[in-house]
Length: 267
Image (cartoon, rainbow, N blue to C red; front, top):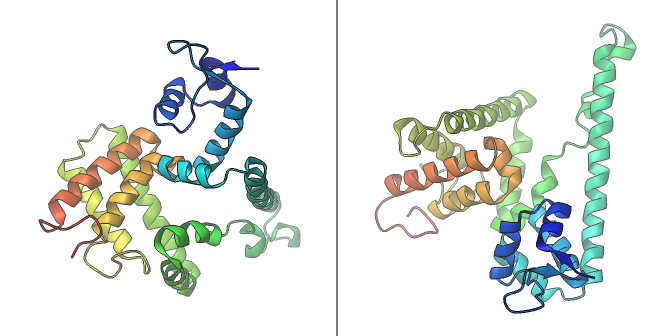
């Protein structure tokens, strides 16, 4: 049995344009009855697409996805590995749901009664900042994760709240500027880019931390990731907002780093 590109787009939510791009770069070859015939997909292609979508949700770029698919040819075993990760994520989400339900129940009761009290550990169950440990380690090394994790745990609850508030304010300012149609090269956008660079350089363990600026390659790599990864794009109002952030950071990098600096650093 074969499915048309329109049917696959409707079933998966992946646009026909994206599917054609996957075909063009050899990531998801389509089946054709003739050289000029319409794109159609068979069962093998659907299994491959499922793996592509799972890997994309993990934040991998197309090049990395292609490498994984080429090296892990046992599809059943690869999907079993994904299944373990999905079940772990399902468990974490279940804990978050239960945590929020307990908080809502407590807030709706009289806060002066015993029933109205709720422990912080119950409110925060399932919200674990270490969930990105593997991803950070793979991208920037175990030392980067260890240093940033040690720094975060050393902060008081008040300091953690203040830090999160700073990041949320920056994200909101980016999203507002994007929604207003701000020019990425404008003074307003470049002031946001400077705040962004200062924030990144202030996190121990990140490339260039403790310096005036984060490593140039790290900054530009994150800028691209904001657009490529929906998890990051959501912080800036969606893909269009993420593109605005990326473009502004690219312009900032051109202006802020000394001439001749390579892609990996600022010195």
